[in-house]
Image 1 (cartoon, helix red, strand yellow):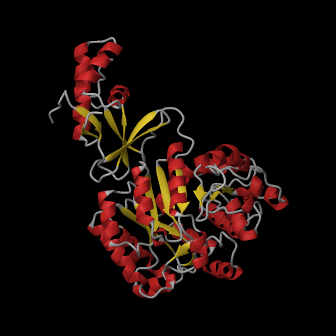
Image 2 (cartoon, helix red, strand yellow; image 1 turned 135 degrees about the vertical axis):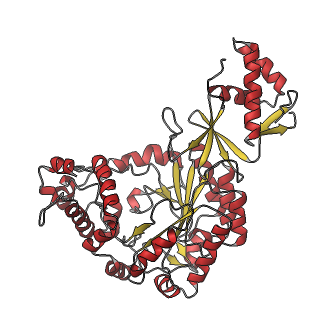
Image 3 (spheres, one colour; image 1 turned 120 degrees about the vertical axis):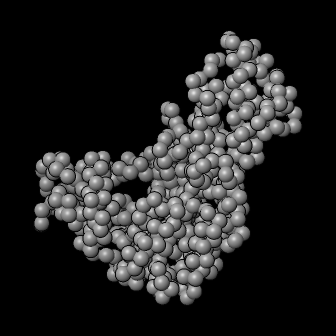
Length: 391
Length: 101
């Protein structure tokens, strides 16, 4: 034994800056738990929400003990963070119990919530036992009328504000994000100005506007509605480039890492490495992908079996759709494009059918960055490497 | 903070200690342990050696004697390391005095 030069035996690790692992990390570092699909909001653009009072959904949800079993196994496999999401996870009556259980396992909790159900008691709990991750609050408007219209619940805005005020009062770190909807589009500046007053917001809020269709493919009518709410590709690019120099800088870094054709391999994303357990015990490769052939029933198996035997096979799946092979497999905009098996599943009920909307969005971004000229199609560009170098 | 050599030190109930992929990870449970919301603690190599010795709920005197027997080195340095480790981790509310086994 010899003394080290550093006087410190314990080392604080900021995970946003450093990895904990000298060699290989654990089998599982993070898992998503979708505690319920029910929500106290009824947002028009949502790809998953079910009515808050749905008895059928509630009865099918994992029991408290089942969720604890999953958390215990996930902790044994090495997770440092669990994301509790939904629906609205605070709708679960056992939320406090599950939260405390996860934290006592030594797991950090990342909570996605609309904040409407935050009570003084919950805020006290998070003060006493902090989640160790910033709570992410979805915001649906800056005014009572716009907010309530977006979530289609009278009085929701007041509850949201009460929840956020509790977080502020208790100094519980949280960040905000939100969709751009017809009702709220004109409030973007106000939203960003308000977000800047939140201590944990070190950058502008994440905005969603290229909405996904229903990931359970459960409502053609809702899908048609969502499609009407999607921002046009060119208007979306205008929003993305509101801070033009920051956008270009970010894209420059992004393009050096993530662009280039991926061939017929469908999953270039590491599907299943940070998987999601849905509200009923099916383990999905990610939060969005619910294709029945690609999910694993953890009630009949184990996370370890899914991670070691099931998902590696999923990651090897190849595209066969001729249109995909002719376009997406050869397209160098892969990094921009939100096309993925989850989107294809929601949109077309297949894993490899190109999603025209996301293709248009990617092309609009590429034109903005002068990677493409008008009318050019990215999969036909031969000198794409040279174009990327010009950014 | 004074270290009591005849006391037994164990993990505080304000943190959760885990071993993941060969690393000792100390996760704050109570508020105010770390400075940032997502900070965790790990131990340096010497910290890991001492930490493992503490798991048997032995007094510090016993821990020091065991380490002196197992490690070839300066006895004074071993003692300094153990006391320094305990001082640092009790200050950080990671270790507390506990009942003997």
